Image (cartoon, rainbow, N blue to C red; front, side, top):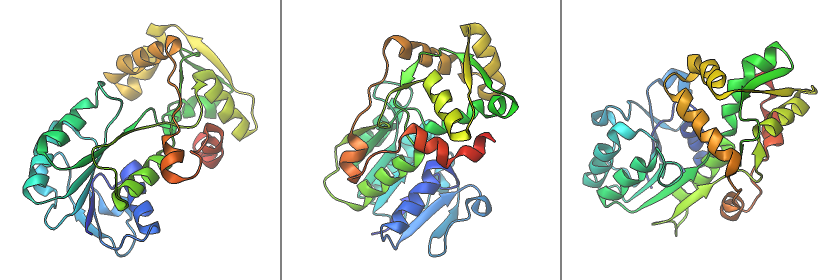
Length: 265
């Protein structure tokens, strides 16, 4: 079974490659914009390309496509996958009805049997706080009581590899979260424990929080904090999907913080 992993330069896509190899996959093709940076393992067929340029996506002979989220070309790439005879698509999207719904719509329109992976916020988004944590013990941001069940990217990749390599997932949508719902204040405190420090969350008014975030997130700063505001009154509940699919618990926020403590030092 030939598997094409798109978005394999870094983050989830790169982790999916490692998870597939660890589970015994022996015919993996990886699409990356930067092969040197991706540093893919021996035995992986490496192709330079980008989902934003559909003609560079090497679909010939592919049985299963892991589709990274790129909204502008999702319809075209999915149509090309259907024309190339791809038998299954496993896509990384987001919560139904939100910004990432277009990924699922584009994949389904192709007619290729598919599975949707719907993670919430990544634990790695906490690196937005890294400069402040490196500078001191007070972390200033908005909506301290905004609460969700953030997920480790490693767990998303493990689920993707499991779904790619096992049967019975066609037509399924899997909402993926971490094992516990935490406020933003509690997340900062967990990072502090991983570092052996007492970190304090200082809540900023909405407009100040947006302006602080704008240099990093640009036009998406407002959207990101509007989402955080909604989670004050309607916290995201944790699901057991990761544990049910993988037969092991999902990584806790505190475990993730310990594993990645160097990001904040």
